[in-house]
Amino acid sequence: MTKTQATGPLAGVRVIDVTTMVLGPFATQTLGDMGADVIKVEVPDGGDSTRLLGPSRTPQMGSYFANINRNKRSLVLDLKKPAAREALYRLVETADVFVHNMRLGAAERLGLGYDVLAERNPKLIYAAASGFRKGSSRQEAPAFDDLVQGVAGVGGINAGPDGTMRYFPSVLVDKLTGAQLASMIGMALFAREKTGKGQEIHVPMTETILSFLLVEHLWWGTLGQPEKGVGYPRMLSPNRRPYPTKDGYISVIAHSDAQWSKLFAAMGKPELFEDPRFCSLTARSANIDAAYATLVEGMKNRTTDEWLDILKEADIPCGRANTLQSLFADEYLQETNFFEHHDHPVEGDVVIPAIPARFSATPANIHRPWPTLGQHTREILSEAGYAETEIDAITAR
Image (tube, rainbow, N blue to C red):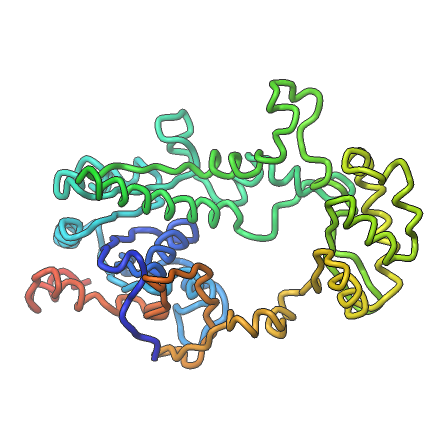
């Protein structure tokens, strides 16, 4: 069974995780991967709803839940009960970080606002994320990934050839905001090391995805002239995609003049580099659809393996374009052991994607798989000083 000592850079940091769905759990899993003791507080009736999503061998252990809740301990508390809420307060007193992704007003009504918890623990890092900026007119508006994708323009950027808006096929906003939230928590912990003071963090989903997207897509808007055009043309070209080969698909990207010259030559059309549309970076940028169209036609003439041999020899960035299924046979991912096999106490043999980051002095590790609902309730409350009879009273339905 996977269970080793947490060794990451946050080992010794305690996190109280009152998050659900994707955004919050993704953030707190990142903290857990880095070695923090993450206590996931779940409701008695079913716990986090993602437990029901995806395949599993036992109830309430769905694959969706599995991939955002490893390296955590599960504590079941009904926070509407005064005794359970008091137990949470006692845990907060021992914690470094408190995280939630509920609406801010809901947290206040539950007695989990920043002022209440900071009174119990002035050094606490209190971190929250929700759809819209705290203090704005939309502070209490409900928000989910699809909604914010639409509001932030993701659907427009990802529109199909007919102009129909489409959501990006991933919970992009939730995971990006979760990653940002985890990063901000790390920064706040660093600031506390210098000042000794805790603080409140709030990360809005909408502004987070916009700041991410507009790096390249603000375009003329950067100069205060959005009417002249927004959106990076290269990213929006319909010909910017994996290219069909004789037997599959390939990803290939040329940037410099030297790369394009060699790429045209490899396709048997060296004269294209003399074409005024393609002879310089400026010219190609102005004619990017046409430039990429040459690859749509050119890549059809060889197999993927043939192209990989030719393009690698020419030092042109390239790679086999995988499907989700073919990732499991990818040579590079096999080499790096990205898909780790672990022994789960109730699910048996499971696959867990490896932690991407590597630390030379404080290596992160997967020290516990995703927990069963309430698996660590008695253990955690006992650590907080509760006697067995008190635990019975707190957990009584």
